[in-house]
Image (cartoon, rainbow, N blue to C red; front, side, top):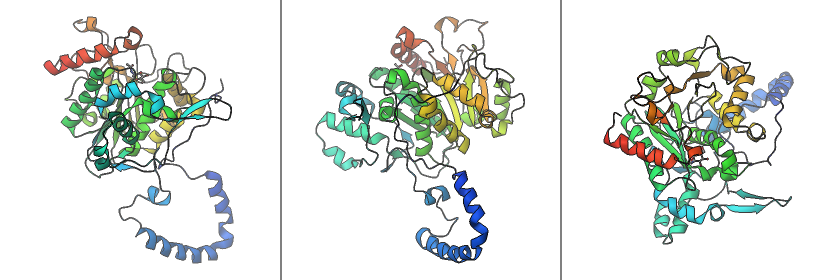
Length: 414
Ligand SMILES: *[C@@H]1O[C@H](CO)[C@@H](O)[C@H](O)[C@H]1NC(C)=O
């Protein structure tokens, strides 16, 4: 099966990541000997110019960013005042009324098709200016467009960032508040960061702009954006909008990433996903693991929650699976796309811990809660995350999330 791109080209962000093009490197090495003397002279000149422009190497500056000025989707970024980054949830009804059409520019393409586009150079409106805006619509639109520009660059002890997406078109305000508050409550207990974005913010970046078809892939885009926004954090845990963090006491570093926990929950020598000929490693170096992806009892990768460590492999993984070549392959699900990439790239598979889903996503089923002989994937008391797997099909996501959240508030150990 060969992947072919279906959608049109999109505007790729210039992330602060990229390996030097190999061919150029080889060429320049070949020529090198002839001009050693020249290079030595030039080298001195460049070194002096470099020092003048950038200060001494090894001082504060990150070498990656000082060579290529890097930015994410937006050129103009805004330093976040708090490590808890989430949208203004009160804008949910206004944004829903306004609709996508009034938030982005709809551009007519040469072939007659229409796409939403965004302005990478968009200038954020300072907070003082925002205060002067009287119209609620204008304010909500401005806040929506500026939210993705927030970055948290402070160097502190921040270990983990909890990442989620919320959706003003399909979610009630109540369940949005429940999801945001749940992540904030958890993050505050452990001094973690929170990075929550509207799923609609990613529409202009998608080749297939219908969220009902490509919305799941926004999980990868928001994770990559989180890594860009929190360059100094170590771990990024995605928890989706059908899930709640139930056991707020568990720490990501101590209870999830700990090699002995991983050792217990690791799925060794099993098909990467249902029926795939490629199996997970029997011996995996747990200390070098960069990605943690749960697999459910049916052998499918469960992308409701997953974790990436801040590493070049994680960035490569997120960018590669988000590439239109993989993502826009006809009807492919995010779980199939990820399993495809892992099967073809041992370099990534050897850094991936495929774990039993209960480690970070237990299927919530009210009927099995009290069942003593429950199988290992259903939620039971003490589990980290509860996930309403089939709520979208049943149309109960909003109610499920809100009810469980209220229960959790009244009885934190349920
Ligand atoms: C939850 O997120 C998905 C994308 O992951 C999105 O398609 C969906 O509309 C969101 N809301 C609900 C209620 O499922």
